[in-house]
Image (cartoon, rainbow, N blue to C red):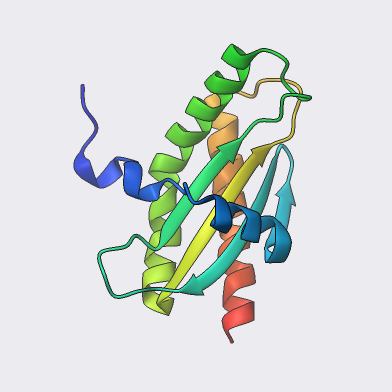
Length: 136
């Protein structure tokens, strides 16, 4: 069964630019909500059809030794974010801001999908709160 188009997480949400990823680590800010660490950098939103949110996922090799485990965790993260991103996107569109995100998984154990989904919701709520404080 295919997901509705509104809930898809397509290529336009993927952060591919190496320069922008490096800028995330150089000048970005971070929020840590165990088992996730979020590094973000905000920019002005261009009026073209660009999405207000681009992200990249990371599971460090020193945390998860096997590539299959790292890939599985990244798939679970993408799936959880696919349903939780709408509140963040709505906030960003209202404030005309673009956000580059890097989500880093920092736990040695694999966490179930339901728990990870709740953690991402809390993380996005904290991010919205922090962004609204910065904008005002």
